[in-house]
Image 1 (cartoon, rainbow, N blue to C red):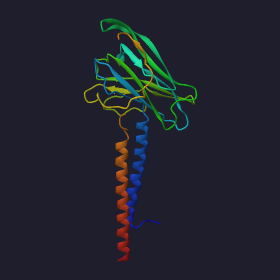
Image 2: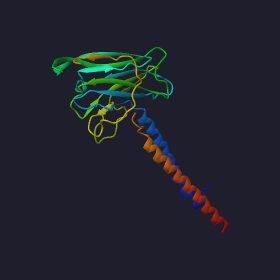
Image 3: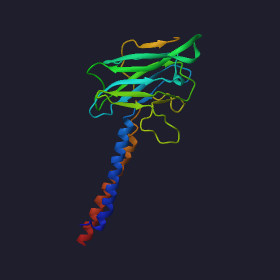
Image 4: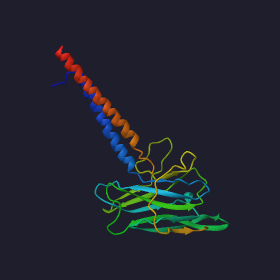
Length: 243
């Protein structure tokens, strides 16, 4: 049985919009699940607080560990980790290929890995997120810093956020967190992790908006437009039948 012609086009339009809405919701969920890094005060040559936002993307397992790698290109002479209740934190150092200098003192090593681990029975439950903050500097004189990260789950699985994002290409499935230090990208307000005891660190010298929200809003608006089209089609059909 086929639909009357006045109803056919709105029905097809509604089906197309529902498909687009489903795709937009999936894209929004995927984007929101990325591990990201942001800062309100980081600038080249200065000191700043870096906040890593870690959503739990599993429906059945909790996030129980986060390992953040600091490549030598992103190395800072001083780096401290802010404690998070219910988590332990450890810092691993590595030797610099070439010694540097901070406040007149020679630097031969830097923090290369920061690892947070949930205390037994804890972690980031499904549907939740956690923020982990680092404070350090001097920040390298570059436009952006990359921090590959590995997210571990209670079921033994891992999500490796280590793929580089290349300008002009589609975002990879598991992009490494990147902090922009350009005038457009730096200085953006961000939510911060809860305050804790004095930070642990290595001294050589001394919330962004949900990225999927706009796409979801547009899809919902399109759905409402399609529904209005169906209603108009039904009314037109009724007028046609009654006449």
